[in-house]
Each structure stands twice: as structure tokens, then as C-alpha cells.
Image (cartoon, rainbow, N blue to C red; front, side, top):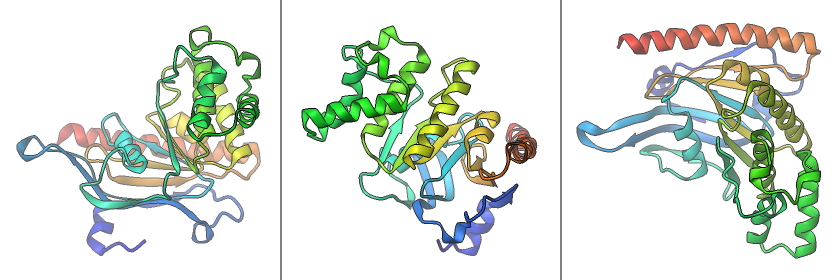
Length: 277
């Protein structure tokens, strides 16, 4: 991606490689999506709000990137731009056609349908045959470990289980890119840890590219191959942290610990700066 000098200075991106996985050189990886000099403004005149400004970002195929920042920094706006739900004011978003699925904080399941019915909905819209739909639903429910709950309705499930149904439904769309907007923010800490394990397992089995929005440093350091820290509004990339996914558990934990310390410092400095401005 080509950037002019003013945009490069304005964005102030610093890639901090805590540890890099073997054979994961950025220069040799295939780009799944790209944001080029993106600015998004809501409203006009004196009431205009600049949500993100001069934002440049590349996400690579099969990567899990966490967008991290304080509330109101434009994280969800970035996801909406990638999903095509919003248009850029300036710049462009380059994404393979019809290849994204957006998963929200709330499961947004159809309450009148069973678990199987909710997961099957995208398959019905794809006009898949009944036998093929049934087989795919079984496979997806096994993937999220809900094969015993296919005939249940959403109100009969826990919050974590509903989110796993939502994940299965998202995967049923067969998108190359999964966009997740704080999907585990409404569940308790223990359930969240279990959902993290499920997501990492599903990602390993499917190879889906994930852009994950969170305001939790711990969550980002646990899930992400790379963490992109956004500034307070208007959102710009402050720093990027690449975490090692190929070392020993002890090495990975040490790398994550160093990343958490540095990211916390960056966020505190940014929040303090924004509070004084």
C-alpha cells in the first residue's frame, strides 16, 4: 500500500514486534482486506463528528486482528466500513466481494426458531438442499459443541451458548472474513474465557480471517495474532503489536505479558491526553 509522507507522519504507526511466528513474514502473506487513508465523518457543519481519520490498515488472510481502544474511538465504525454498512467519507476499503459476516455483542437469534433453525437460516437463503442443510447444521453445531441442543430455543440457553449459536450461524455464511464487535462483552468472565477457547479452536479448524473489536487489553492479548491500538476520536492507528502464536506456552505468555504492559501504557497516555484536550 502506498502512503504519502504526510499521511504516514499523521498516522504515526509503530509496529512493535514482541515476537514473530516462524514463516509468518508480513511481506509474504496474502492481504485479506485493506483500508487506505480512510476518514469517516458523521453529520455536517458544526455538528460534524469525525469518527476515524486517515486510517490505514491491512489484515492478512487467516489472521486474527484485535482492534483495541477506549469507548468512542471508532472501532465499531471501522467494522461497519469493512462490512459495507457505512461508506467512507475519504479513502477506500478494499475487501473481496460478499466475503464478510458481522457478529454483534448481542446474539440476535430468532426467538421463534430452534438452534438448528437459526443456524440453518443462512443456508436457506443460499438455497441449499434440505439434506445438505441438515448435514451442514450438524457439522457447525459439533464445531461449537452444541450438537445436543439443536432442538432448543434461544430462551432455553445460557448467554454463552447463545453466542456460540450466533458464531455457528455466522460461519454458515461461508464468508472469508468474520467481523466480531465485542461479541463476548455481555457474558461473565468465566464464560468469556471458555468462549475465547472456542473461538481459537474454531479459527484453527476453519482458517477464517477475523477482525475482533474489544476494549479489553487482556482479551486482545489472549486472542490476537496482532493488536491494533486506536487513538481517541478521531480514531487513528497509534501502535501495532504482533504476538507470537508459534512458541512454547511460557514464551507466548511472556510475550503477551510484555504486550499488555506496553498497551496499557499507550492507552493511559492517550486517554490522559484526550482528557486534557
